[in-house]
Each structure stands twice: as C-alpha cells, then as structure tokens.
Image: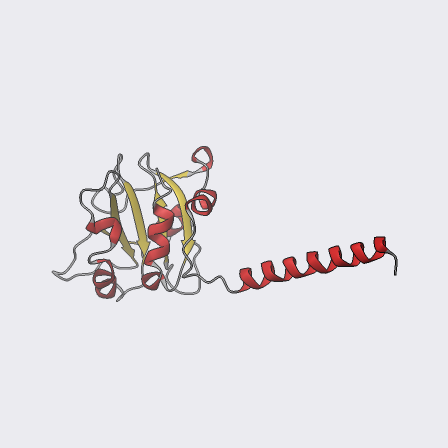
Amino acid sequence: MTRRRAIWIATLVAVVLVGSVAVVATMHRSGDDLPTMGEARRLLVPAADARRAVDVGDDSPTRGFRTVVFFLADGQYPAFVQAVRGWGPLADSDADNPADIVAVLPHEPQSSSVITPVGGDPTGAIARAYGIPLPDGPPVGYALVDSQLRVRYATPDPHILDHLGRVAAILQAVP
C-alpha cells in the first residue's frame, strides 16, 4: 500500500468516525435537553418576521414584559399551578427582565385557585393566532412573546409541564 493511499484511508476512517459520533449525539438529544444561549437565539423567529401577539384575557401579554403563553388541556390547570410555583423565571422577582405567564385552556378554570391570567379558547382561534397547531384534541404547548408583543417562539408540547427547564432556557434569549 502506498503512503498516499494509507493517508487517504486514514482520513476517510476519521471522517466516518467523527460523523458517527455526531449522529449518535444528535439521536440522544431529547426534549429535556436545555439549549445553549446560542441555540436558543437561533430558535427565535426574527423580530421582523414575528407575528403580533393577541390579547388573552386580562389584557395579557403586556407591552414591556416578556410573556410565556401556556396552552393547556381542560383539567390541566391545577397541575400547571403546582409546576410553576417557584419556577425560575417567576420566582426571581428581582430579575432585570421579568416574565409574565398566561394560561390558555379550551374553557377557563372556574375555581378560586386561579393564580395567573387565563383565557378560554374553545375554538382554537387563539392557539392558531400564536402559531400553535391544532391536533385532534385541544392545542397543548407554549409561545414566547417578547417585550414588544411579538411571538418569537411557539411550539406544540404535550408534556409541557415536564419541560419547564427548556422553556426557561429559551425564554432567556427573548428580549
């Protein structure tokens, strides 16, 4: 075997190995993985292309504040309240860039334990306005709204209450 051919084979083997490692690493990334700040910024819709946020009950979102709009199924609100108690973006009231939260459900909860602004969306019109797809059931997911009332990120997520860390990581990139 010539020296040139040996170098070519060694280079080919190295490329295949590096590519294999990259594929395996990508396959093992799950919805629970937290994006880096750079990845989070790349996920955001550019401000110029972002749709305008629509009001969801109680005049939310509010200009000047970042907002997470959670789309929940009926009956999911009590678990949502438990999940967001002490949640980082809400717990730190001294934060330089605080975030509001709003819950949207097919039907507004009718209990005294409502602690967030809520909106009813029986037809899915609000979800569509935010860019959340309507599956066979109610839309479940979240949208991140910047301080200028632009929807910068929206995604369906049937396990949203288990992925609050990811929501917080992407929210950090929202101005």
